[in-house]
Length: 105
Image (cartoon, rainbow, N blue to C red):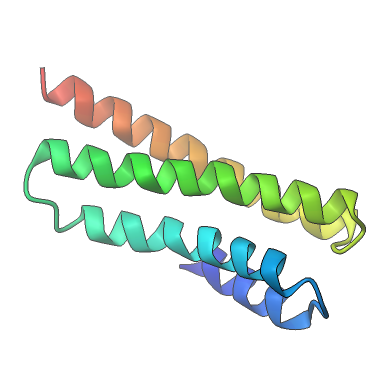
Protein backbone atom coordinates (compact mmCIF):
# COMPACT_ATOMS: atom_id res chain seq x y z
CA UNK A 1 0.00 0.00 0.00
CA UNK A 2 2.86 2.40 0.77
CA UNK A 3 4.20 1.96 -2.75
CA UNK A 4 0.77 2.65 -4.26
CA UNK A 5 0.40 5.80 -2.16
CA UNK A 6 3.79 7.08 -3.40
CA UNK A 7 2.70 6.47 -6.98
CA UNK A 8 -0.64 8.22 -6.44
CA UNK A 9 1.10 11.26 -4.96
CA UNK A 10 3.61 11.25 -7.81
CA UNK A 11 0.85 11.05 -10.43
CA UNK A 12 -0.84 14.09 -8.89
CA UNK A 13 2.29 16.14 -9.64
CA UNK A 14 2.63 15.19 -13.31
CA UNK A 15 1.05 17.63 -15.72
CA UNK A 16 -0.21 16.36 -19.05
CA UNK A 17 0.32 12.83 -20.33
CA UNK A 18 -2.95 11.84 -18.68
CA UNK A 19 -3.28 8.49 -20.44
CA UNK A 20 0.26 7.46 -19.45
CA UNK A 21 -0.21 8.67 -15.87
CA UNK A 22 -3.44 6.69 -15.71
CA UNK A 23 -1.63 3.53 -16.87
CA UNK A 24 1.08 3.94 -14.22
CA UNK A 25 -1.44 4.65 -11.49
CA UNK A 26 -3.62 1.69 -12.45
CA UNK A 27 -0.80 -0.85 -12.65
CA UNK A 28 0.92 0.33 -9.45
CA UNK A 29 -2.24 0.35 -7.35
CA UNK A 30 -3.29 -3.01 -8.77
CA UNK A 31 -0.23 -4.71 -7.25
CA UNK A 32 -1.39 -4.18 -3.68
CA UNK A 33 -5.03 -4.79 -4.52
CA UNK A 34 -4.22 -8.22 -5.95
CA UNK A 35 -1.98 -9.10 -3.00
CA UNK A 36 -4.79 -8.09 -0.64
CA UNK A 37 -7.26 -10.15 -2.63
CA UNK A 38 -4.88 -13.16 -2.52
CA UNK A 39 -5.22 -13.16 1.27
CA UNK A 40 -8.87 -14.13 0.79
CA UNK A 41 -8.32 -16.67 -2.00
CA UNK A 42 -10.47 -19.77 -2.39
CA UNK A 43 -7.53 -22.15 -2.14
CA UNK A 44 -3.86 -22.41 -3.11
CA UNK A 45 -4.39 -22.19 -6.87
CA UNK A 46 -6.50 -19.03 -6.51
CA UNK A 47 -3.88 -17.60 -4.11
CA UNK A 48 -1.08 -18.25 -6.62
CA UNK A 49 -3.16 -16.83 -9.49
CA UNK A 50 -3.77 -13.57 -7.61
CA UNK A 51 -0.07 -13.24 -6.79
CA UNK A 52 0.80 -13.91 -10.43
CA UNK A 53 -1.53 -11.07 -11.50
CA UNK A 54 0.18 -8.81 -8.94
CA UNK A 55 3.56 -9.84 -10.40
CA UNK A 56 2.42 -8.97 -13.93
CA UNK A 57 1.24 -5.58 -12.70
CA UNK A 58 4.62 -5.11 -11.01
CA UNK A 59 6.43 -5.72 -14.29
CA UNK A 60 4.08 -3.29 -16.05
CA UNK A 61 4.71 -0.64 -13.40
CA UNK A 62 8.46 -1.02 -13.88
CA UNK A 63 7.93 -0.44 -17.60
CA UNK A 64 5.97 2.78 -17.04
CA UNK A 65 8.54 4.07 -14.58
CA UNK A 66 11.33 3.43 -17.07
CA UNK A 67 9.35 5.11 -19.85
CA UNK A 68 8.65 8.14 -17.65
CA UNK A 69 12.34 8.42 -16.76
CA UNK A 70 13.53 8.07 -20.36
CA UNK A 71 10.95 10.64 -21.48
CA UNK A 72 12.07 13.09 -18.76
CA UNK A 73 8.58 13.08 -17.26
CA UNK A 74 10.09 11.73 -14.06
CA UNK A 75 13.50 12.52 -12.60
CA UNK A 76 16.07 9.75 -12.91
CA UNK A 77 16.51 9.74 -9.10
CA UNK A 78 12.79 9.30 -8.40
CA UNK A 79 12.53 6.62 -11.09
CA UNK A 80 15.44 4.68 -9.58
CA UNK A 81 13.94 4.88 -6.09
CA UNK A 82 10.50 3.73 -7.24
CA UNK A 83 11.91 1.01 -9.52
CA UNK A 84 14.00 -0.30 -6.62
CA UNK A 85 10.89 -0.47 -4.43
CA UNK A 86 8.98 -2.15 -7.22
CA UNK A 87 11.86 -4.59 -7.68
CA UNK A 88 11.72 -5.49 -3.99
CA UNK A 89 7.99 -6.15 -4.26
CA UNK A 90 8.63 -8.24 -7.40
CA UNK A 91 11.22 -10.41 -5.64
CA UNK A 92 8.90 -10.97 -2.66
CA UNK A 93 6.08 -11.93 -5.03
CA UNK A 94 8.29 -14.38 -6.93
CA UNK A 95 9.45 -15.98 -3.67
CA UNK A 96 5.87 -16.19 -2.38
CA UNK A 97 4.61 -17.75 -5.60
CA UNK A 98 7.42 -20.30 -5.61
CA UNK A 99 6.83 -21.17 -1.94
CA UNK A 100 3.09 -21.56 -2.48
CA UNK A 101 3.67 -23.77 -5.52
CA UNK A 102 6.23 -25.91 -3.64
CA UNK A 103 3.83 -26.31 -0.71
CA UNK A 104 1.16 -27.42 -3.16
CA UNK A 105 3.22 -30.46 -4.30
